[in-house]
Length: 93
Image (cartoon, rainbow, N blue to C red):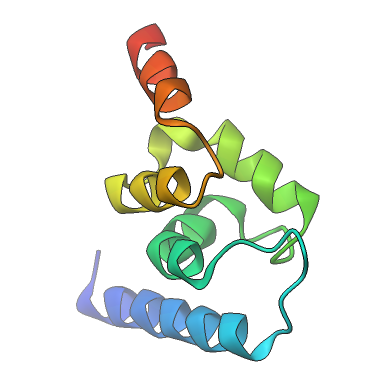
């Protein structure tokens, strides 16, 4: 990865964080902590889906084995996925 592309990804993640704060919260919206922890995972795997859509959740679940530890930890803490489900998926690999 070139330094330019890393800077670009960092800028995109920061922009996503700002947008997450600016967009009104929906009843099913994920926490700001999850958005911050999973921003790079979202851009790597699921950016074709709009933020807060069912497609994002489905995509993130499908790519669960690729998600960063930081993102998975935030998802567990927010109750988006259980620790036992994560452990089950890891053991199945």
